[in-house]
Amino acid sequence: MAISFYEKGELSSGFCGWRVVATIRGKRYQKYFSLKRPNTRISEEFWHKYQETRARYFEARYMARSAAIQYLDFIGKDHPATLPYRGVGFHGITLGIGRGKSAAQETCYFSVNKRGAATKFYIDERASLSQAWEQAVQHWGEVFDIRPKDIAKKLEQVPSPDQFKLLRKQLNNHEGCDYQASVLHHVYAEQRSELEKHKAMKTTRGELKEDDLLAMYANLERQVSEFRN
Image 1 (cartoon, one colour):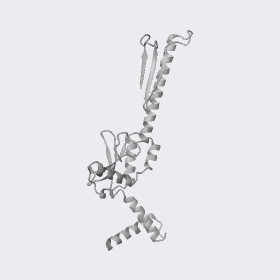
Image 2: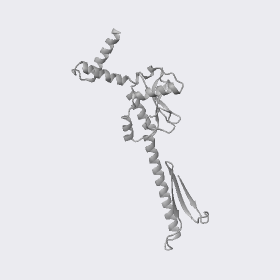
Image 3: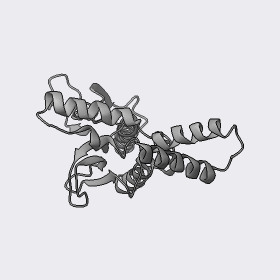
Image 4: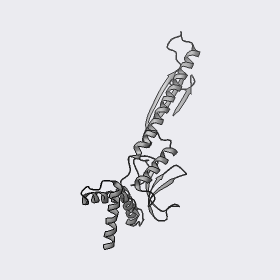
């Protein structure tokens, strides 16, 4: 984004006045505001101020448009430098697997990547996949000044556990890691719970309908199965 003023005789073309230039998504835009008056009834001083005002106005328009497009790109697509299988569809949050200060063992996490102050939200026995996602997105919204309605939309877009499965495969096969399948245990916990509830519902023929009762039934079935084995 740039605004330039050219004095009379400064350019070989003979133009004198303001030029506003902007590059948005790789496309160059420019507009000229000449000091050459359309007729002599308009004073030089008035025309000078008028053209300068117009140039400043178009510069502000280009800046606003650029800012709006940058914001939409930020919330609508992965950062160009995002490594394979880490992206979640927008800037600022990526998937990860590893160990950190608050993680006793290797596990999956969401990382909110504010420059110089990345924060990880681990998926473990204390926070399920959806809970860690909610924490990450709320923090992302705060640190990047995201609109509430956009935060609400992202909260609904919880990544699939299979995305971490693909990330583990990428890390092990192409990036020299050796993460065991156990790192995915907590990622699939909610999915396992839902399957157990459906199984319990089917087994009880729909007699138990409350989620807590279904979960309790499913848990008892699992314990009995483990005891038998």
